[in-house]
Amino acid sequence: MRSMFVRVPMQTGYGAVVHVEVSVPYVDALVADGDGKYYMKPMQIEDATERRRYRHRGPTLRSLVKLALACDSAEQMGERLRQRFERNARRAGSGTVSPQAEAEQAERLDRPLAE
Image 1 (cartoon, rainbow, N blue to C red):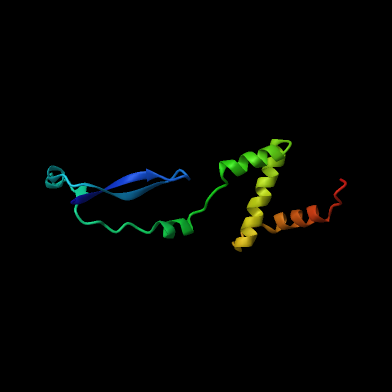
Image 2 (spheres, helix red, strand yellow):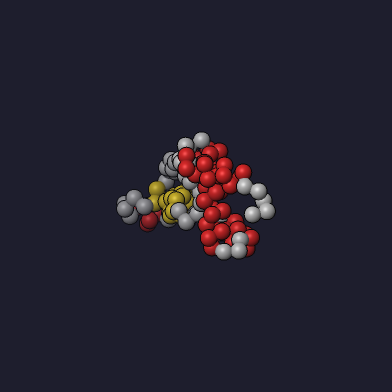
C-alpha cells in the first residue's frame, strides 16, 4: 500500500509545540493538488533528543503539589523553590548563584536546628 507524508504540529507534555511527520494512505488528488502540504518522500526533521538536551525544564505539576503539601505557607514554598533552583545551578556549574546567596546558604547551614 502506498503512503504519503504530511507534517503536523503536536503539543508536548511541557507545553511546547513540535512538528512531526505522519504517514497517511496515498490519495492522488491531495498530492496532485500541488500546495506542497502532502509529499511522497519523508523529510528530515531535527532530532527530538537534540532539542531536548538544550531545553530547560521547569518543575512538574506533581512535584509542585508535593512541595506545596509539605510547606506551611507560600513564603516557605517560595524559599524552597529558590533553594532548589540555586542547588541545581550550582550542580550544573552555571555560576548564576550570587555570592550573597551562597553566604545566606552557609549562614542557614550554621544555624542550630532548634531555632
